Image (cartoon, rainbow, N blue to C red; front, side, top):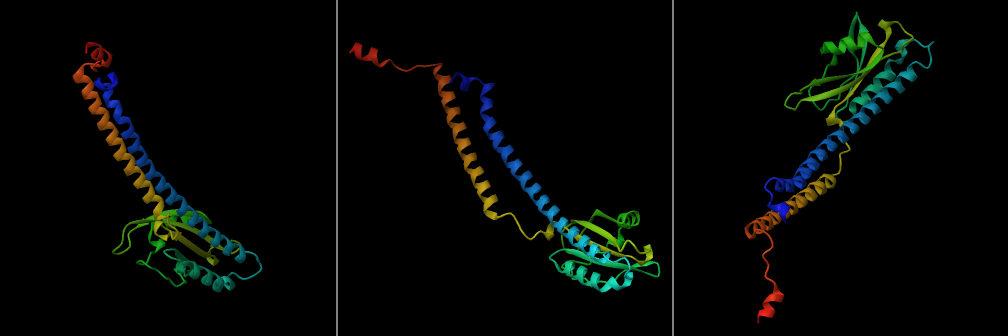
Length: 227
């Protein structure tokens, strides 16, 4: 009880509340990291699809490069039909990259060739990843994680196809179950109320102790003896 009557040490009672706040922030941080991990897995799936397509295209170096166009078109258009996934294939026509696949988009048309950083990336490497931020019409800002690859590599640079796939946080179909976050917040709310109640009770006990200036309980034995 002397601890509760000490004006400086009394503030240590707020430590449980500070820990509760830390737990709330940690939960939000963990949820964000889980979403990022799911997005990374989504991008890995797109990379694997693109690399498998490249492997099939480059399996027979003797085959003319242009005979792969229909297979590339079918594979990329299938990828583009996936929910909120970008898929596009390009070929060189008259020295210009032209997209020859149809788009199945849920948002406004996204064109990676409009971004100088993307042009620099595809000119520097045969394959790679790049993140481009954009805001579709009447929608919120998002970062599109793109993977590109030239194919087939055995052909001259002007005879290659460029395949591009991309995902954003809106491409995530499998979400964290609602009951997980709901249960966590309910648990935190109950803990918060209990912590507040304990702190108030301890503060009241400390005030009573301070008013009495220590133990002021009557001695029951003395009272009985006096009678």
